Structure formats: structure tokens, C-alpha cells
Image (cartoon, rainbow, N blue to C red; front, side, top):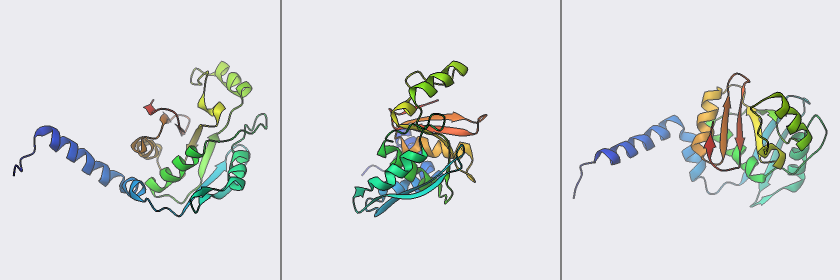
Amino acid sequence: MKTDLNRRDFLKKSAAAAAVLAFPNIVLAKSAAAVSVKSVSLYNIHTSEKADAVYWAEGRYIYDEIARLNHLLRDFRTGETHPIDTALFDLLHDLKSAVGSNASFHVISGYRSPKTNETLRSRSSGVAKRSLHMQGRAIDINLPGIGLDTLRLAARELRRGGVGYYPKSGFIHVDTGRVRYW
């Protein structure tokens, strides 16, 4: 039996061990197949609304709670609501577990109407023309007590969509699109 590790195997195993040490809760979150409930806690910084919602239990989504979250994540400029991708709530649930926080996510931007997105785009080069915010598949957040670097790294480790890093503006962007980072 060969016990020598080649360089590539050594690097792979070292990287895996480093990830477990850096983010042990992600490993636990990925291995927790028997989750009984999923919840999310959000605070909209523009409307001062807060929601603590158990949005999934006993193997199903709870659509009354999801409707409440959709309302909180509405375009605060126009009042328009839009269905939010349930995978985004799952991502937030797992992200919060990964960093081991009990705080509410502070929401900088949830759903954006096409009108709002175009207005923001005219003022900033950082707003995408086909933003996933307009599809209810993106959210800009921070988490009090957790550094943006830590939150960004944990979101990247989940590998569940896009992760944007905006340290000067005080938030990260996560979405349920393809895996990519900026």
C-alpha cells in the first residue's frame, strides 16, 4: 500500500483541511441533511422593517412567510413587490449558519424594479443592465458583528451563485445565478 502523497494530493488535502478550520460551520451546514426548519432574519435599512421568518418546515416552503419576506424585500422606491427566489432564502439561511451569527441580515437592496434599476444604472457603472435584483434572485447585505471579508469568504465557500464585494459601500452582493466573483 502506497502511503506517500504526491504534491497535488497534498495540496488538495491541505486546502480541504484549511477550509474546515476556517469555516467549520459550512462543513456542518453541507452535511446536515436532516434540517427540520429553515429560517431567515432580515432588517430593511430603508424601511426599518424587520422579519424573522421560518420559511421552510417539514419538507416544504411556507408561502405565507415567503410572501412576508417578499414584501420586506420590495423595491422601496416604487413599492413594487416581486417573488424572491426561494433558493436565495436557502442561501441566506446557510450563510448565516456558516458564519455562526444570530444577527439579522441588513438589507441594502433586494428586489429592484426595471425602472429603479435603470435609474441606479444611470448613476453608477456598478449596476448591471440585466441585474438579477430585477428577477428576485439577488440581494445586497451585511451582517452586524461579522466582517465583510468573513461574510464574502463564507458566501464564496458555499459556491451557490455570484458573490460581489463592495467594502467601500459596506455590503456584499449574493445571488442565485452562476458561480462567479467580483
